[in-house]
Image (cartoon, rainbow, N blue to C red; front, side):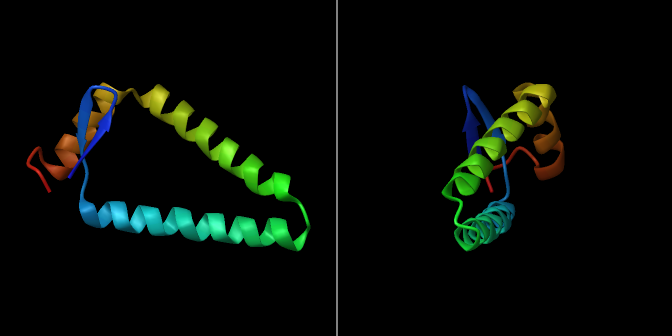
Length: 80
């Protein structure tokens, strides 16, 4: 499987995608439940915003081209 970041194709394993998606979903469900428990809708949305900000910062620091090199080495360049 490949993920497009801008014009760069990044190879990723489908099994990793499923596990990562499940982990993020579980975290967000826990956050939503906690926000509901303390009656703070803003907590859930603030968490989403901070996840976006932090992931953007980390991807920017690493660089899309470097990320592609690393993922090519880890996953191979063939379609998965």
